[in-house]
Amino acid sequence: MYENPVKLLLIEDNPGDMVLIREMLKDVQSIHFNFLHADNLQGGLTILDKEDVDVLLLDLHLQDSHGIHTFITTNKKAPNTPIIILTGLADEELAIKAVSKGAQDYLVKGQIESQLLVKSIQYAMERKNIERKLRESEEKYRLMVEKAQSGVFLMDSHHKLTYVNQSIANLLGYKVSEMLQKDISHFTDRDGQKLIRYHLNQKESGRSNAYELKLQNKQGIYLHVLVSSTPLFKPNGSYLGAISILTDISSRKSVERSLMDALREKDENFFLIMGSMIEAMKPLIQNDYRDEHMDKFA
Image (cartoon, rainbow, N blue to C red; front, top):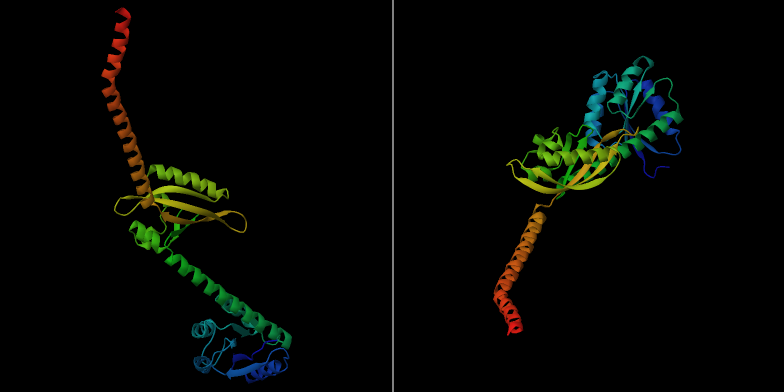
């Protein structure tokens, strides 16, 4: 049972249908309904301006509005409110069209009974609540991805970029729109293209992987990045694409090069010193060798 009353708005211009639905709702024991009614679309929109409605029952044919336009106008006014379409047998196809555009359900007049009405209302509210939570979750993760320091990109099965976050665009000096629908290999050299093809084949077989890659920015400068990718598959198992996280490791590579240069210079200095010592010792060694052998002939 719902703890709080459910505020229901019925927009219906037929007095008989209005009374029938109101009486059905009164008979419900598990839910207490606060019943609101308007007999035209404008009246319903006025109520929606003033009230936070939990669920809305809508007749598509009213005195001041007809057909799918009725739903579209209402849904625009109350996009977060679950809407159930009330229709006659002759307009069932129109009701189905409304559902395809976002209505939660439809009920055929003359076939509505109390239990069916309540179930439809409950399911509509639950589905709308799930949709709302999904939207909030998607928005939260979208913001996380957009604000992430690391780059995030999505590729389709043809290796085209379908999404890049702002971090990647900033790193490479492009606008996001300039990168979309381009092949990822567009941003690297021949060696990088071979490496990408190899790892893409790995992903299509279901393997996640991580690899280093050089990407060229808009100014033609190559940056070192670490790419970590996870393949995506459709429910039927066919390859959909991949989601990848890109980390700029150019600074790390620069440090590594500096260390290698320092070690190489150290090695070179060592061999130079050793060479100099050997050259300096040669006369001593030669003199000792000569004196030793001259003594034998003395």
